[in-house]
Length: 181
Image (cartoon, helix red, strand yellow):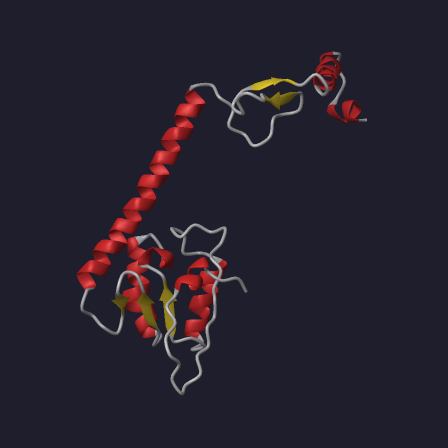
């Protein structure tokens, strides 16, 4: 199991006579705008199986950034499973229905934030493409990334002759299999 990094910031509460079992559900490498995450699916399954009765997050955005899905879980799914939801920094607790409008607004803002960030990233990538800059992780065979600017490709003197030979053999009528041998 891996834990959310926010568990280090949770305040310590005195334990009652009942035992406290803390399960951590991994969200690393998955964007919170997606609800089909392995750790989240396990959390929902554990709530369905009544293994857990409380979902605790640092804030609402840690549950998810899609306001319709987040609202579905906080308003319908978790309560129907007998599972309480608490978002510490946002003051959300599904047992106390005192700030429902605030929860809706925060969920919408989290969704808009994710969409805005996505649009900004797309715009930067598009401008990079239009400027003719290379954006791949690795340079194709026969090229290398420039030491001065990683978005510029330059001919690699070590591997370029191999690529030229492949092209020459193809122009001479050799097939792919014969070239590979």
